[in-house]
Image (cartoon, rainbow, N blue to C red; front, side, top):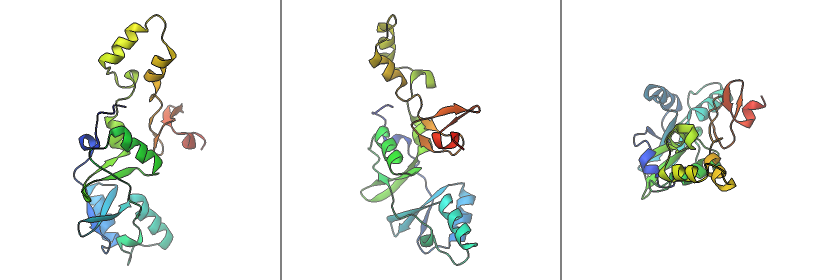
Length: 191
């Protein structure tokens, strides 16, 4: 993955926001209307949480209805954040380690966008055979190793070849494999 690419280059600057006291039902309707899978929850201008489709669904199943519930009743308060100047590889590590599908991008404590695992994967520079693009260094290394590739060059070429988004559950994983014609993570392969 190209360490020179920053979150600023791939983040979505537009996001939908709600407040803690907003109706959960109305906020879910807004999410559908805006075609977003997450809402940033603000207290004034301060980000205090995030509400995802999954959070709404869990509350609906638990209570049988969204009536009378507020965003605060369903939102996640452990809000993983990243700065716009963080490297794309750093953001990938945060997403992988935080068990989340998106990070709030903040600058000086203010939200400026969202970066999702989909954004990361879409913008990632994977191995040459994955996206058809090669750097000058990769081409030179391949020419140098044309007769007898070294373990080091083979590792560099395949380092991210199994990383991506599972076609079944949609999660970012470092270990994809082909199963029934789809690229799937180990959890979905076992189902």
